[in-house]
Length: 196
Image (cartoon, rainbow, N blue to C red; front, side, top):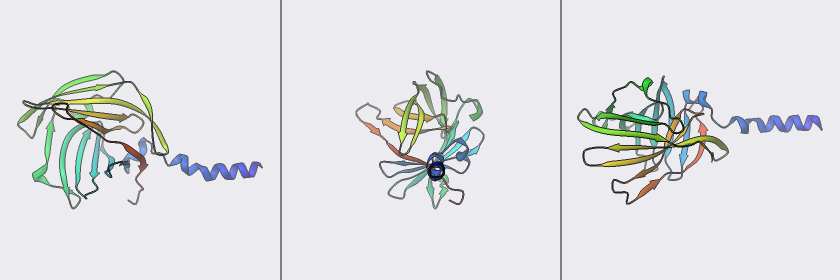
């Protein structure tokens, strides 16, 4: 009987190990969304995460995220490489390593120069942690909101920060006039294999 229990526990071990941890960010962590989008997060430098998103129409884009949260650079991808003509750079008054890591109840107000000419006021605010399940994996999530305000527009992004993994994913976008909200549901979170 003990042998059988040991065998069963060994067989079930990979299922537990399948849920990504922060160390998996080096190779990549993949999120599958209900709209067919595939998001892959990779740590490419201290305090910086690369996000590539492939949509179901094969369109793809790439973002660099300070602390895995704040957009530093955004560009469309062609043949897997950033297209320079589409690249938008966000310049902040602080370096990525000085950007605050999301924490419950925290608020950060800053400004960014976008594309070298347009200034945006940015307010990041974070709520209280909650547990969320993504497929077979459960994580603590800190829900947050990033408000981008320009001269004639305002956009609100709902973010879910995963402190155990070190990045936030986009959960919703609210239009300028609050007439509609686009919501994004993550179905699963898996680690990218070393050969992928």
